[in-house]
Image (tube, rainbow, N blue to C red; front, side, top):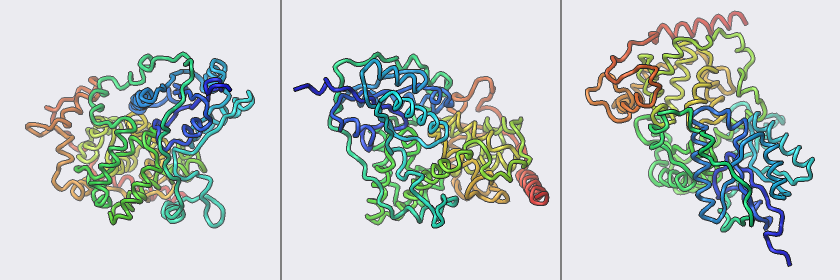
Length: 476
């Protein structure tokens, strides 16, 4: 009778599923009864990520490697084209099977189709599994058979669906007798572009599956009940902060959904809003799957000739958090210090850039791509187009957020702006001072500088935006 290790191993290609529980690809690999070889690739798609997400991806991979080693397994690191690198591993290990969790954005879809086709042509059993989403985008249709373009009907169509149950982590992950060679993760220098910002952002992260589950548990226990109100207030801990962990798959959406449903059944009213936010993420991928141009182009073609500016000096001032508009500047500085930005802040800075500064949303999207540790291709693109007015289910362009009145409404005690804006405070708090340690030295900024006057008065910027919008309507 042959031993288990006589069987050809299964390669588990690890991507945005850096967890052991609620992982269908991993469970399927273990259920074959063959040895499992977890593999993490630095392919051109990973290598092209911005500074913050690329660095954070590496931290997540290292945490998964540690969790695997606790179970007698490990993560193999390889760099190169995905198909050719997997082919090499198949040849080296004798593997006959490669499993992975599905992706839905256009770059990864194109890569995965090529990988699956190439491996299957080689006689390899190459399969993808759900895991990054609760709902496969092609399984939700309108009454007429098309895809949803507005969130609320989408929510109503899926809210009562039977969602997948999260699967427990395998008790053991069979290891091969001989491991293939592996690169050293630190040799890839995934965090090189973060420079000195890494040390500032690192304390604000929750890395790995255990930390993600702890974050979910604390949110459900203490904050979900008031979530529908508290999530709009940037100066308090009112959100789940799970976007960081969902981005890298350190926690599965099914785990979050189950926890939210349980909280709702217990009478915690804010849980429904939490569930809606999970489905908003699903809606972003639903749209990206059906209209992949959302990632890079105006979703509504009629906006292609709107007179947005390309990158410009005002946009650079916006990037530096020196616009003289306190909500905008506080939110931008929060991103440099913590790696994330409160959702209310994201709406404000995006509206300000695309309307008051008349700058193309792609300029802001690219900066977020580089700076957010919770960067997500679908959510980031949809968020920017929502704010700009060019996207699906978007805020009308003529709805121009006033950052000052928004700050008065959602930061009444000024705790958010004081936390992140040092100028003018005799003894600035730690996070306000940390901004100056995180940014490039070439910006030449100091907490002793005077806080700037607005680069564009809010009423003037609003009028300019509305005039441009009216001119576009008249031309149409």
